Length: 108
Image (tube, rainbow, N blue to C red):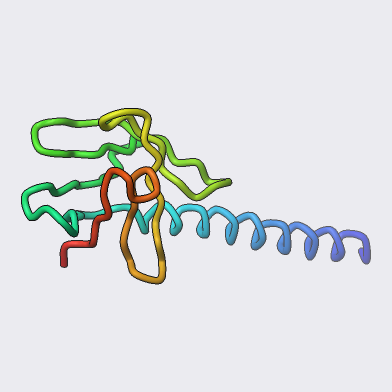
């Protein structure tokens, strides 16, 4: 009986840890989602959406698929070239290629 009780506790703790890891990864990805406007060009907006298992970036008439790297907390996409999109939590901005291809702020 004691072993059964300890096994139930161990399984419960494991389930909680796994849930927290999954929720945290998803919430990190969710920070990228939404409409973004370039800080130095008023007519250059991006929309980043998750549709089913795909991450899509809409830029003008172009739609680009992206991949989320949860280890580095970045999006990888092919916009003008192979691009890396990072989220800056302090400013709630995203940078494309460390800002070389633009800095974007969230449209509210």
